[in-house]
Image (cartoon, rainbow, N blue to C red; front, top):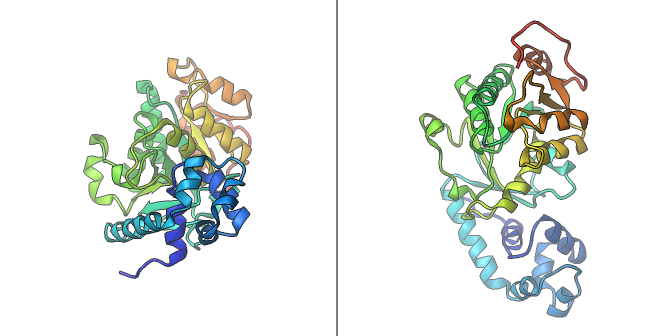
Length: 311
């Protein structure tokens, strides 16, 4: 296996320093010129960087253990088939650069969508109705059959069903993980697709590889889902849940954000009406959604009303 270049190692090391998130990573690199220069900075220079915690500065003063750990991590991941994709490598998804704070390092198992490949995000509550799960699964299948890669967050409920629908239809799906790639476990519903991990199932995470789930990681992951999809479908949203966070990111990024409009909204979809009022594009049936997704250039208005069973 080809050894990773030092720049990648230094980026892994800096991204994994406690207290260094995307914003701090960016601030440090802007201040000193890059990760290598950050590790070469004097202690008093680090102390003068605004927002740097004392424990973060202390860790940066002793870069040897950080860099050694990053080299071991990179070598181990390479043997496991996981690639380290940094913000300065050609494979880094151009769609993520639209974010205010793009992740500096991604851990990826499987093919990333190419810049010209249509990818569509699906989001929804983890505590959802039977109707919502059916819509998510059918939507994932419709998207896959129309040639779209389905992007979602692999939470239980809507996300899981959208991934499953895409795979059952013979398509591809990207699992944006709120954990490290090594903490990933395929759940029972997708277990029959275990051999597709690294192929039709792509794992993507910005978390350190062994990190367990955290609410902070889940919230940060939501922006990646919105950015990687050319459009977003909200199936069921709670007013204060992560789906609304994903929706707001999509709107800020200028992505068409479709929202299921129910005749009688389930209890888990009380945020759908709020999303439509905030600029979401209502879809009332699978037929209307199909009209939107069959076009590679997504319409930015409500699809033309067509015959079909209403949600």
